[in-house]
Image 1 (cartoon, helix red, strand yellow):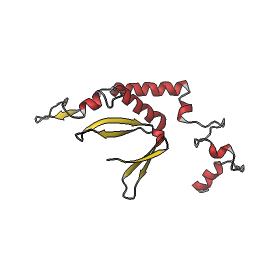
Image 2 (cartoon, helix red, strand yellow):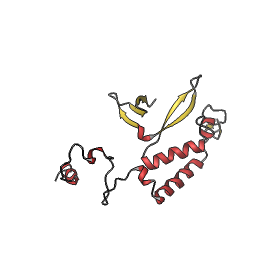
Image 3 (cartoon, helix red, strand yellow):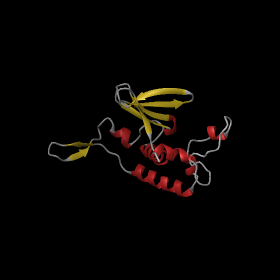
Image 4 (tube, one colour):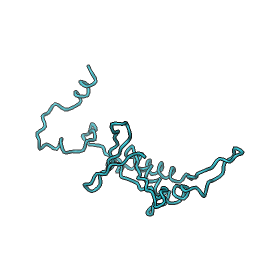
Length: 163
């Protein structure tokens, strides 16, 4: 039996009409109980929520510092680096570093990905990291193999590059 035949054998044989809920329901596979498991539904389970909470809070509490290598091979904190305050203290106007990394880790754990837009300031230096809802982002490769991200927000689609 080929892989495609095996996959098709898992699809129920009943015919679905054009107005059947099968076509309009979530794409998440159904469990034996017939329930689609989505990230939102999984987070309603206390054990899943607690695990993601512990993981996210643990990662968010880790200090994120930038170091510079000294000529003698030692290292020291590069507190004057342009990205130090952004990563260590406040990635954007609305979140502390702890809140930002907690949100990113929770998105990664629950949805398998986390995205942020890198905003440059007036001087061209990275000024902000704006988190994106991973459910609104579609990652693709263009004809040259470069990563592109289509961000869907309020009916508007924006295409971003990885650079």
